[in-house]
Image (cartoon, rainbow, N blue to C red):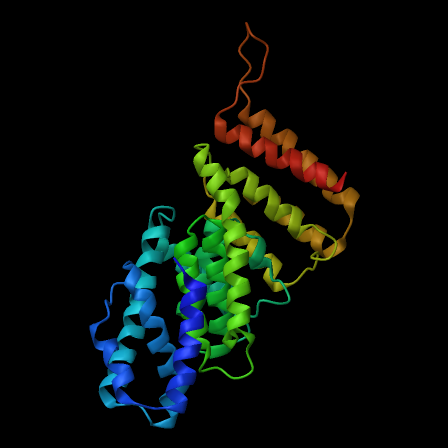
Length: 322
């Protein structure tokens, strides 16, 4: 869809209306399609932008303000519905996850979430990352924090290959940011750059989908551990500790991750490579003894696919600090 053209039209329409505030310019808004999936919805953007820019000035007709509020409410409902569809198939225990996020994650970021500096949430596996951002957003009252969370949600959607939804959500963030002071999300140039970067982010997901592949869980977990143990991120703080426990909770198909939790936390606290290496190597050997089956006639290790992935994680952690 031609989002950049819609943004340009929105600014032009607003400028013209400011110079000549004629109600007849607004009448077409009544006839526009309200379905976001319709291409004609892009024409709504200029009317919603003008409403957001002028609603505090009391210069718009009552019917126009009412319709614009309704359309913005419909947008929020639409996005919530789309997010639910995306996440429900991957998260088989939403109530338990929400309880964990309330107890361990939400209070850390309440009213304070910003895109920069990066947080431990930013290198969680993508679907889990998206779940956390959406949860924080739906439980956030601070308007600036909501802008930053919408931006992170859009970025995650693009990385997962949902480019059009990411684009629409970025435009929605731009519209809603007009209410928020001192934020760069209000700037159309920032929005255009975001749309361009999201296009590139989605390319790898498209290539994988074309090849019938997907990023494996173990690959995403290895990325998480790589970032967690990067020298610039190695802090023994509540954010890192909470995400370690979140990964253990979320990936319960890998119960051995729980055994790695304490060594990881101790390493963040002490930065003692030798101690961490020894602890992981010990857990790895215990895991192999418990998981491997060695048939008498074959004399070779046999593992389930999940056990093989778990062994890869042990091996990867040892390589990171070797």
